[in-house]
Image (cartoon, rainbow over all chains, first blue to last red):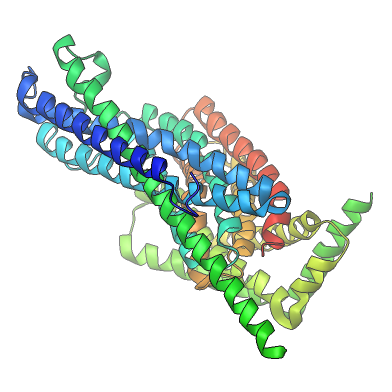
Length: 247
Length: 227
């Protein structure tokens, strides 16, 4: 996706992707809210499942993109700076989408927890791991924000590798921690399977939110590429004007 | 070995600098002491309670104290552009890093050695489990904090708000290590965890130390030369 000169076919593809995403999301909404019967135990509260689970699934996928893009950035940093910039744009876009999706996952989970368990929050292993994932990627974005210009991408890439190494350790350690002290409030998890009548709503929403995530990821990526190119142009112009002055 | 000699040179330089100023150790020691006193006043614990919370308080005190001094340890290198000279020197960058980590490790261990008796007195502690296991847990946990902390302090060197950067990055990354050390220390003090569980936490700490030491050593060159 070259954002240097927005090509028509690419734009067309973007618009049609967006349109299809909207259609899938509307289908998913209709299916989750109006068609699927209310959950046998939870009633209408259970419908948040169709939003919570897709978001949490996708928020576990985007960090991999961030990690791969950061590795690619470090590899290309000296070998091919232009490709490295592209990888960096992908890294920042995927980190931001990760934070957005993890936030939605935590928020919808918290609302559901209040309705189903009577509490907003509990230190259950999965919730804690998700919170730490969120914290790590917020730390990543803050580092990028605070680092001085020119080093942002390198420092970000290094931190992304630390985060990627840390996530499995976090997950493991928290499981050990909580298996020793089982959390007091526990309704059976969602793994116990869902009724087949709920599957269409679930699948529509997984696909829809996945497409939406990829859409905002690409949109953010294109935006970041434009920013980078504008920055390069400005630097080039400054360089050229300084050359003219000296002549 | 040539590499080892470089590491030892850096270590010797840092130790000499600290010996002449004693900034880091004095600062850390007093800061950790203040944290311990403040917690003691805030909670006013009985002997049984203090055993349960002592592991957490001790590590939180050490963590905060470490954070305050780690920024200084690189700021020292920035005066007179010493860091730029280091960047140009032919010795491997990771030798500089390892020397600095070893020096910081010694400082923090010294602080812990002074703090531990005071801590026992203030909180009326006596370990119900195997007290000698703490001699294993403390250095392992300290290494986890100091190794990552030194790395992130270097990462934050040229950022705006340097002092703020270090805790923002170090805390989320070292949370699993913190969890392991607090669990292990509390388990030893209260004898509530059996030895298999304590061994599991110690293994986690060893694994964490190994993995992150390797990652830090591999990536330090990138951070030092970040342009």
